[in-house]
Image 1 (cartoon, rainbow, N blue to C red):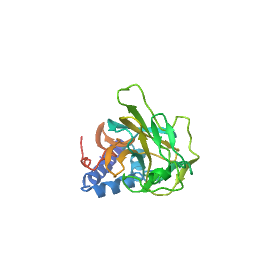
Image 2: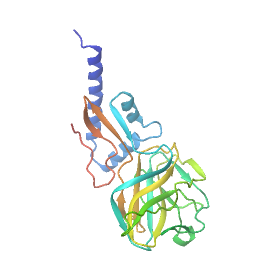
Image 3: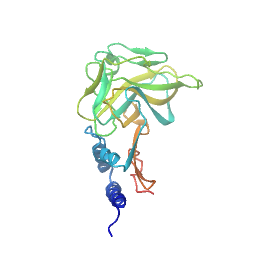
Image 4: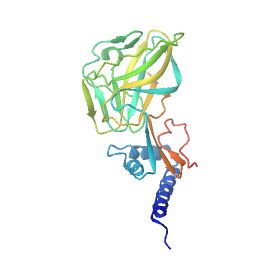
Amino acid sequence: MSASIPQQLADAKANMMKQVVERITSISTDTAYNNFLTSMTASSGAGAAAAMVANGLATMVVGEVTSGWQTLSFATPISISANTLYTASYHTYVGYYSASPNYFTTDHVSGVLTAPSSSSVGGNGVYTSSAIPAIPTSTYNNSNYWVDITFTPSGQSNTSYSLFSATDVPALLGVNDLINNELGVKFTSSIAGTVTGIRFYKSALNTPPHIGNLWTTAGNSLGQTSGSSAIKLTTQGKVFVAFWTKLNPSDPLPQYTT
């Protein structure tokens, strides 16, 4: 007698799971992983990921608001020096972002934090087109891409500063270049302290995942946030693999686990 319909469906799911896991664990280079990551987060609906979720093979875990201010936290707060220029940025895989043209014609000051004018720092806000996180260095029309930080001064654990308030809203939402982008802002603090996270303003079109980054002006990475979203593949109650966990070049590639 042939297997029951429920068993046939279970077998089909198990076979699809096996193929997906084999595909992931066959990835052996950073380039291959980043290409896979890009294909999984395409604006067409996350491609294979959406299919796996629809077939009950995967669970989408989204750690972001639909729209508005989103914060990506660093696992460990990052120390910064006083009166030193840094770049805070986030990476989007879908190409959508928020903007306000002609914003950084003058300094933007918020408490101890300053986002200098474009003319004083060789351009502010900044962007770059890249499939993976990279320091943004290009500028256009003094535009503010609404990237921010959460900053705690040294010795003031109960105090937090950001460049923009929760009520600040970009002039343009859902701008789309149809390419992966890293968007950022150059900033200084008048006192030393730690950056605990990256903030950015998103529209509903700017779907996850996103990765926050902090850079020196020389282009050295000071830290990267964990992923804002994940896809977990499960079958029979076991987690087989989680996507979007390799966010630092030194991290190991994903492996098949039970």
